[in-house]
Image (spheres, rainbow, N blue to C red):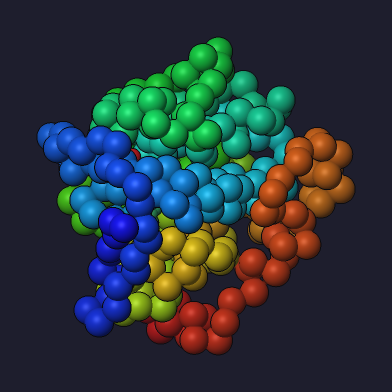
Length: 283
Ligand code: AAT
């Protein structure tokens, strides 16, 4: 049996069995590897870190997308930064109210390889007429985007190493604020509270966002294949509070069938463990 192993912290590792490696490629941006796995189905890694697999991708993609739409059911223009596997776009495109989605992924090869090996996330995305796909750096894109042009920005990024680093900077969050309209919501990949290396990134990101947006929250979800399994998204907004402005009935009326997200879970996800709250407050 062959094992894919990932270092989760200095003293812990995670392993899953696979049948064969489907593809391996070094792009100008990162090392990409696709595997045919046993427990989690097909999965791919970037620079040796798990990104997406067939078994738990629904958890991540439900949770990056649906809480914002249940808070503001009138979202029309969406910007996705990263998200090259297509799963985030797939969920956004399920909303009939959405009329424009711009997805800015730095590495076209991620998207093309997902079209080939991970149709569960990538298929149908490029064909949707509301979709504009751009292959460039997300930081450069927001710098040049006009003021108040989006209702929602979803930052579906890698960890703040190599190409993903710019998406965890104050400059990037400031541009996101400018590019969002007065109803604007920013959701960002917010790392994990459990292992110190990830917790340090979580604290830094939160501190920067808190200095820019009037409403800032963090919510949690359970991701079996990301380090420790306990992961977070940030919810920052100019106007909407994810709990006080939750439109549970309006969201249910849209009639989406979701495997992980529901509006009870929405409320619960914002209730954080004490050690996480303290880490975020202390910074
Ligand atoms: N949908 C969950 C998958 C991801 S992949 C994140 C994507 O962000 C990758 O395709 C990567 O190429 C892209 N990316 C990284 N930096 C940039 C950038 N500067 N501009 C645009 N796209 C970028 C997220 C996995 C989260 C893993 C957490 N451990």
